Image (tube, rainbow, N blue to C red; front, top):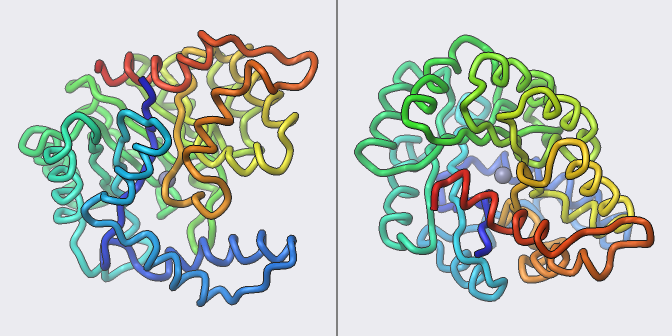
Length: 310
Ligand SMILES: [Zn+2]
């Protein structure tokens, strides 16, 4: 079974335009390196249109093509960073829950809630108990540390319900702030909630994986997803293999989960290619780096199956 632990669905008004412009600024810079000149507005507006998929049709089609059996939908609550969101976050969460209800064999929805909301615990309770959402997504770059006091009531709930929490880690595009998503803050969650599965999205970021390993070696409840590592695989395949091998050797293969962050990296690498890149590791990894078929099966789905109790 192949499980993508990290995907997003966007509809018009679910996220502010400025969020996409921040990502467009990054994409424009990356493409300019290979001689493709585009304006930030052009790329940003294109992203808003391309990622408009409120019924998850594009995602389901992409899953079919990539052979992905299940995808986890992660609503992103960035309203504190971008005030005045057109569709309220409660509604955005409900829409995600409905997609999971419509496609119970394919989609699983987590709740996306900024812990600073006055009704954060009530909303989380509604998401899980009334709408069947199966985890919590936090995006600290909107302006909070994952170990600050407002977060703990949500983590206590997740612990009581025995459901995982997925937290963005590593750097983030403007105007969001990367200081909040440094992996060292997750160490507290290991200390205070040793039985709560905490998934650090992006494995600390492409260049933060060594700090990530450092936290994981002593905080055994911390897992990672490898979404966004498509960029590392494209730019420097041997480095990608070395980094993934290091996470496996020092933190443990059983704590690494496949993720794509779809649709964010589609313009760099399609999901069928990303899945194939992982599947091919036992054959394509450079000399001196070995991956077994068993490890690849665990990363692609077996580990997520265990964490999500599927
Ligand atoms: Zn994401």
